[in-house]
Image 1: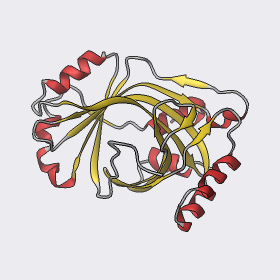
Image 2: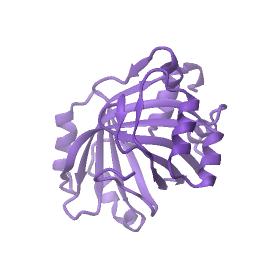
Image 3: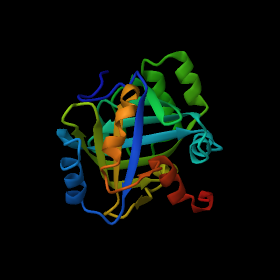
Length: 237
């Protein structure tokens, strides 16, 4: 088992600030980054990012995130490339947030096939077959898969290599519970684009020069919250 190329381990905390562009084009979003004060340029190749989120049966992670609890965790399995079929080099991630700062613990998993009929029992077997610490396995047993999402991601870095932006679009969501029977898919409007600014804690004092130059307001956006509420509109308040 190994981590994919260009994977960020994120063992030290960093800030992640989000900006939501609605009714916008990709060309406009790219132009904002390339002409901003940071002079952001592309790094890596764009790729499709896929995540399956895990939560308690009563959606503890969802509510902690939704109501802005300062200290919270989020569990997901991430992989790149095709959403279904053989998943190469999937990674179990436990994201730990304290306010706006976050880090993650990452555990490589064995490759496996994801298709209709993949149940909670299959997930448990997959975790048991992987080299995971006992405390992590115990935590996973208290959680169930609740959402699958998928999106295209592009990567940009400032001229001084201090700040990074990711640009996410074509956001799709799948009701994981329905994988057992038939997939239910929902998508955000095609012109919805999420910009996420990522940087080390030590550079927080310099970030305003980046954010003030953008003609879009800093916002709050969680792909997990949005996806859960797409399939459970009664939760949105």
